[in-house]
Image (cartoon, rainbow, N blue to C red; front, side):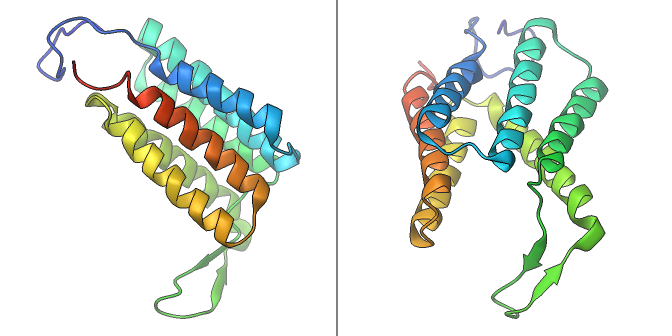
Length: 173
């Protein structure tokens, strides 16, 4: 990435495509060690679409509207494989659950696109996006272990490991 405007934090050109290393490590680990059911297939398919979009954007600098449409498509792929947010709750206020019903798919798509862009927006500082992602993965790993979801634990452990493995290369020299 060549620093050509005030928005860039670095002063000298730095390599792009760091997300590719994280994604390859994550995908290979999940394919080798996790049970890949229909929902996981959708998640991985959506992740690959986002990965390809990111690689193309790093190489070609794509328009924001195009990236947004591809993100929506990737999120739709996830939901079309049965992975949706079906219930919403706030255990601090009440122990009941709100059934999202027909709003399940659109809310899931909005959530996936929002999280994707949130991580993309914080990717400007060295180590910030991978650090936040690692903290999130570690939190999800603890929760998956507490509720005995071994396959989810394997998947988020793969993500945590990929993030931690890359972190060394993602700090300001």
